[in-house]
Image (tube, one colour):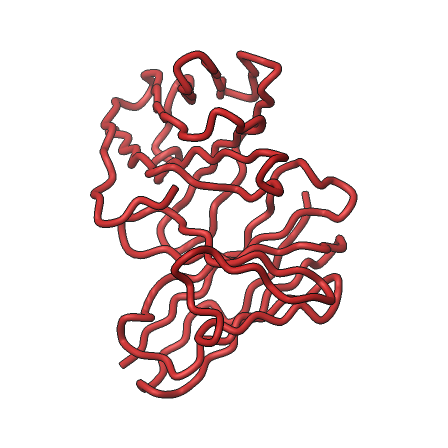
Length: 117
Length: 113
C-alpha cells in the first residue's frame, strides 16, 4: 500500500519556539494532504487541508497564523507550529490520498508527538 | 465532527470471541466510510471501507455493515486476537464536502487472554 512518512516522530520544545513537522508521500503523488490533531483518549480532529501550490484550507477554530501549512510539491507538506505553548502539546498526524484516487481512503503518517515545556 | 472532552468507550472481549464495534455517523450526505485501527503512539491503520451503495462488505476476519436509514456503521471482528487490541475509529467522507475525512469518537477494544 501507499506509504506516508512523517518526521519527526517526537519533539520536545520550549514555549515560544516554532516546530516544523514534515509529511511526505513516498510512493505516490498527493495533490491534497490533511493535517489532524489528536489529544489523549480523543478522536482525530481535522485541522486543515493542504493543497499543493495553493493556500491551505483551515477548519473552523484553527488559527492559520499559528499553524502554518506549506505544500510545496506533490509529495511534501509541512506544518509549522509557531510560538508553541503548552496547550499546543498534542499528537499531530498527517494523511494523504493518491492524486488519481480522489474518493478513496487516506493513508496516514505515523504521527508526531509534540510536547511544549 | 470533533469529539471534545469525551472518554472513549471500551469493549472488552475474550480471545477467540467475535467483536462488534458500533459507530453512529453524523452526515446523511456521507457516501464513503472507513474503519481505522490505531495503536498507542501510532497513526491510524486502514482496516476496511464501504461505499454508500453497499450495506455489507467483508475482508479478512472483518466485516463492515452500513445502515444508512439510521446512520449506523459497525465493524465485526471474527475470532478476536490479542493483537486486535487497539482503538478503533470510524470515519466518513462525502464528495459534497470535498472528501474530507471526519472521524467518529472511537472505541477501545481490549482482548482478554
